[in-house]
Image (cartoon, rainbow, N blue to C red):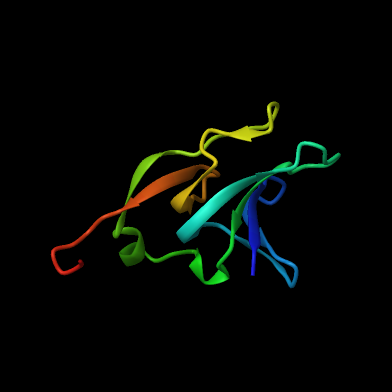
Amino acid sequence: MKSKIHRCNCRNAWSIQNRKRKITAAEILLNGDWAAELKPERKGEPKGFIAVKQTEDIIINPIKDTMEKFEKVMKLYYDKQEVTFNRMQGKYLYFSENGSCYILKRIMNETED
């Protein structure tokens, strides 16, 4: 089921929403594919979301051991005036507690193929 993620600045939390429910979290790890979804015609905010097809790819408040399997590559920026992201799709995202979003790269260990 498709889920959308956006920053809820009024609560200083990330919001995850699908057709069945809406939850908030301080941190989120997306362990899978994502795509930006833009709705510039919307009257209210937010107009930009991150969409995830597989709900199982969303890890709420990930533990340190899980995060050590990834490295931050660059920040994902959302331009509120232009209603656009600096990247429109990818794999692996980390939504941090401070409100930043990072594109990640998975670190391969010797034991992994």
